Image (cartoon, rainbow, N blue to C red; front, side):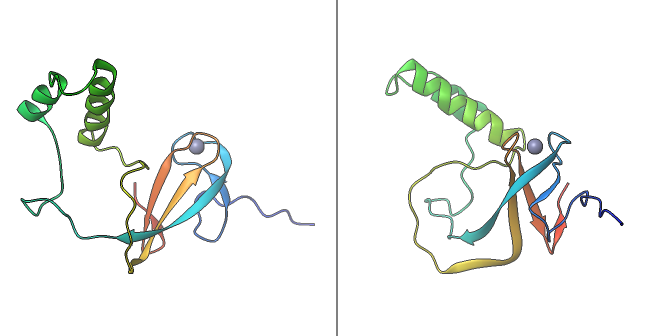
Length: 119
Ligand SMILES: [Zn+2]
């Protein structure tokens, strides 16, 4: 009897070697939906450099909230892609050909374009 090895990475499986923790792990697949960027500049929001320093000292937020916000933007600015709860959205713009997988072991997020893992 031939035992099929777990695929290293596969769109057709919900268990494969996680690209983050390198463990053979169960994965949760997510569809991706889109919403137009909604800010006055009309470009994706990024807070970095001087803006991030101002945020870090903004007395409008309690210290723990400031710390959380700075950590969030540092993570985004470092190029991390991760799930975050934001405002609820309602959209019918489905991103065909793009999926996300989330590792049940380490919660690492992987981006898939055209059925291929983006590394
Ligand atoms: Zn993992």
